[in-house]
Amino acid sequence: MSDIRITAVLGAGALGAAMAARLGESGHEVRLWNRTEERARAVAAQAHGVTAVSGVIEAVSGAATVLTVLRDGDAVAEVMADAIAVVDSSAVWIQASTVGPRSAAALADLARDHGVAYLDAPVSGSTTPAREGKLVWLVAGEDAALSRARPVLDALGSTMLHVGTGVEGSSLKLAVNAWMTAATVAMSDVLALCDALAIDHAAFVRALEAGPLAMPYALQKLHMMDAGDYAAGFAVQLALKDINLAAELAAPTPLFQVVHDRLESEVAAGHGSDDLAAVDYPRKRA
Image (cartoon, rainbow, N blue to C red; front, side, top):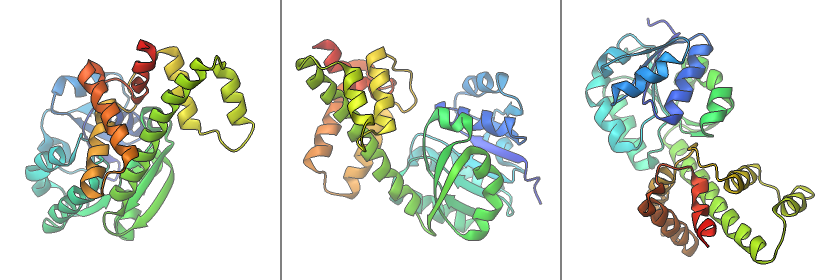
């Protein structure tokens, strides 16, 4: 049986890098792989307990947990197509990428065909919660796999919602991301209203916090917008990818069409890699 402390993290983007660093600090032996090897090496150089590896096979061989944190379902399927054959039968694959339920089901089938335990386990939260071990896990999967994965889940998250045994986690993640993306766009537009009415932003915040209307995530984005701070926690292009995934699975509403168009315009303007708060650029340009 594999040493439970060995975890393969596939994907060294912002979230994957933060997860790898947190796991290393928590006592796990982390093997970090990224398509661009230099990125994995840069992360490992700054993180205790994290080793960058050049190949996916090297990363997953003998690991007790395989954690995929990649851009989309196609990327996960491509990376795991060969790697799955060498994942230990005692290992658990925690699929944390936001891929939507259709891709999640196909990945679950891949795991099942190779006798590998699989958790459909996207997260709510970005880089800072990951580094602090405060992610919210949206997990679907069998209890036995969940139990074996707890050392990793507990190291990275403060809350774990077990929402089903199939791919319910991926469905819930799309709804969560649609909500927070729409709320961010709404915050930008309301700030434009405040500006037009000469309302001080601090007064607006105090009014929200005085009652039940304050949304911590939206207020965080407000402060980023006012500061012009667009360091990516959740990039515009990823939000657009998730809105498109949601549209594929359900009839798009007028609201989500507006959100989609707003995100698409910011990507076209060169802000795809900026944080979602960059949807505020039209107000800054006004």
